[in-house]
Image (cartoon, rainbow, N blue to C red; front, side, top):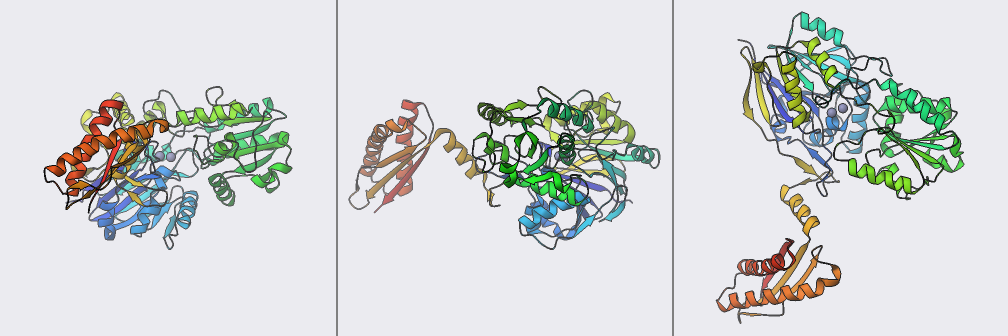
Length: 551
Ligand SMILES: [Zn+2]
Ligand SMILES: [Zn+2]
């Protein structure tokens, strides 16, 4: 009997972010990616992680973690996972470089890093793994082909089919066709992010000429280009346009500085020392021969561009001599923040160039034509759509059916699903936690209750009611103290507090006369009395916080 393979999806199926899966055979486990998710509407939450407890309970059976590429939704969970377990990490040189930076920042040392080159085979746990190059919006992405007792499993990684990538490193479809012909591919797990988008994503190298045009059109102005800091090939094209026009390249934003430094060290980014400068040099540079490349294209509030827009950047003041280029699309959820940022920049006089006007951005994820080409090359017996919001997974499922796959060969999974691949095919065999683990800025886990309380307080405010009772005499020691925040207009606060105090007094006096002395029960009486008044009179539902002391 041959060993079956069990795949456990810990995250990334149902939202973009916190990608993490585990492949298991014969009792041994390999982790595939370990990402985080950036929350857009959870107050005080810095990162959302998969629930790692399933992995931690099995730490002694885990042989390695394969990391496909350097995006946060694939590597951002590692500093948290590695606090609780030690596991060797497999990835490309650039990906490992990014991870090393993160682990150093998190004070995690001693992790074994195994560098993987394109087309290499490595034995990771129970699997022979072959790593193939893919094009994406960060360098050196890797597709993984797992050789298992149940045949080959291909994981696409985040990918597009860029026919003319900036570094000339193509997605290796020919090798997939070869494997598909012999021995054949059993199961495909593929990126669904752009499964709902028609056509093809376009080549990254199409951005260069657009940049050249923007630089020509903005002769005499300072040009500021905001881009993702991990998008090294974009930075390359911005740097090339700057070089062509004799501009100095100023690198701004902590992650941009870090990633540019790493990519230059590894020879992935070619910018000569003499044309590069730092933020401190801005004052000495002629704006007409300066190009700033910076972080903050998604409206991130602490990024370099946001500080410029608010006039709070230490070195750079935006004026009408500036042109700001947004070399990205807003990620869903960030649209409002990006438009606020653009308005603030425009108010300071900056001219704006964004993807709505010119093709200054192309997606790193393949659209339907590219996904179809992958499916045709792999020609897998079985398919599970991965990496996407729920609607993306559905689109990818539908696409597979359109491409002729029979419905019983596609299995749609979500976070927490555990599936088994055996001689008879794929079936769901279990369920693990799909809980969102929320971390604050200092790396501490936050409960759902706390985040819910914060959300309630931020939306409706709170009312604090303090009651002191003489337990022996059965009377109030003093009138209840009531204060609030975020509930009514500050100027009306005292009047409302007075009314609430009167209602609470009546309720507490009545309860005391009935012989009630329990602080908790008196608190409930106070909450109910206050709640009725607050709800009826103001139509709002602030958090009510009674504090009762029985002396
Ligand atoms: Zn990615
Ligand atoms: Zn991703």
